[in-house]
Image 1 (cartoon, rainbow, N blue to C red):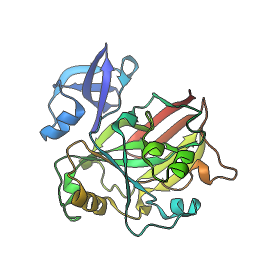
Image 2: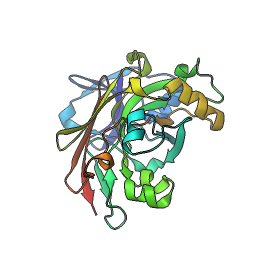
Image 3: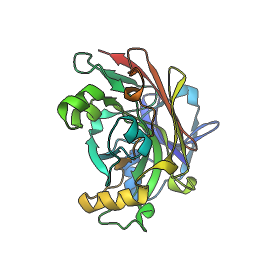
Image 4: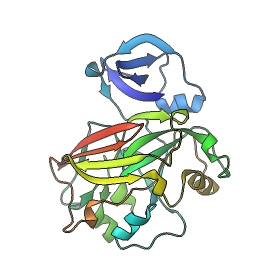
Length: 271
């Protein structure tokens, strides 16, 4: 099932995305509250056509935990050591935007804005000290994410709070695919294009630390709540690693697609 948050006639709704439109769910709660409730409400008799709605970020997470250098080739392309344990950082919830929204930054703050296509995991129920064997039982679903990165801030700050957490730096969407519709989250292709030129083409099969291990690892340190999101890392092909390096500028159009989930597209704007 593909669940979306969207605007229709100025009102926000949650619905089921289909080929012919969005079937509105019989609820007035947010996606996060729906996830926390533990059940998906029945559909109403209203179907909204895609050309009359605006897709919102499918979820506004309370917590976003991200994993750096979780693909060997990505670590190596930036001349970093392959990590022996997960490299964890947090992203600000205010970084969340949806497909079609604009990635923005002040050019006197950063001039090296990079793309990172990633699979995002949505937690479905409270997880604390969960074992890897049981971890996938705590997953509600999956979505597409762009872990936008200010590489100059990443270098100068020596940690990644600003570099990864600036407003608009975490586009997600277009939907959340429920876990029962993803047979194997470690068999998905991630493709990133910039201005229709392919930059990344990788598989989640190549994650160093797989999702069950990450949930076990993170839940030993933090309580994971329904609606929390885990960014699982990006494959190789980022702009900083290119020769010469390539970065996003005003007018750049970034698209990230994961098979079985969908595509997000965002235009960039320097302020």
